[in-house]
Length: 333
Ligand code: ATP
Image (cartoon, rainbow, N blue to C red; front, side, top):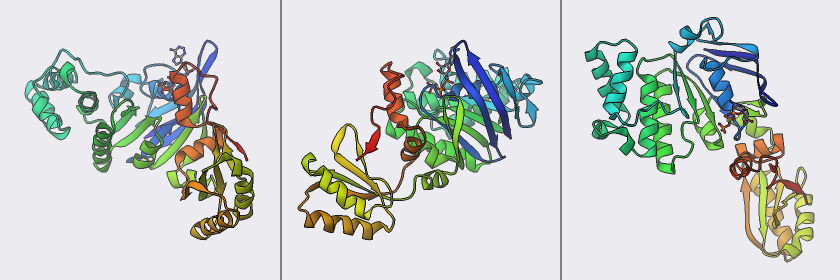
């Protein structure tokens, strides 16, 4: 339902997209995962026909974005950072207006509006100006607006950025329901957990290009399985702890550059490996504050692919320090 090939978009000196390829089969969810500035919104804008690519091609529901942008717009629902909500209108008025803009008769626009308000848990607030809505309610209304004309393809640009945990979970539930009713969905997100929970497939994007793709499990398995993580009571025992871990580890023992008491070692054999580490620490009288066996997360994947954490990059970007992306980099112990 979505196919993009070799998309390139340049803004003066910045190449926002550098040859991006995407495919989303019918009824599936693809997450475009990456930190701030990775090119996610630019990709969405191209697919939604808001901007033209400098090179490459894209089709949505079989319609070419350059040849027939109006045809594409008739087949997509777009929700996210643009906030289609008119805050001076009530939730109901917003939905009714969009229905009318799609050419619905008054009764149909009204019924569709009421149905969506019900479905998105906004019925109680239907007749309040939407400027009185919470962030989560506003996002749900924005998504409802994208669904008025029942488009076969949905594009959600960072649907939960800035929401609190409860609103985010509520949004995930809504999105899951949409998917189970057969929608095809492209979702952009900076949240690894969001991609993990919602997507069939994930494309990890950084600097305008895909740096990895696969299911969450496939991406996680690229990092090489389980690892033992240790926080030592005393940084002075780091070398001794590192030697014990090296005997058990299946790879390189690493330490965090900003916390010398923290060590990580890839292992195979799970619980037994953990026991061997514990026995080694006991023999050497190495004290730990915390020790555990951890399965890789998508953040580990991001780290191993790019050398920086997705969320560290986000924090650095928010602080206006785009060049300092590796603040939490791990280094060999
Ligand atoms: P965010 O999560 O912040 O929305 P993103 O992954 O969506 O990030 P984009 O908004 O696509 O990233 O931006 C990709 C790059 O292109 C960034 O370096 C950004 O500064 C740049 N960029 C995007 N739009 C423009 C524009 N209109 N003019 C100049 N540069 C732009």
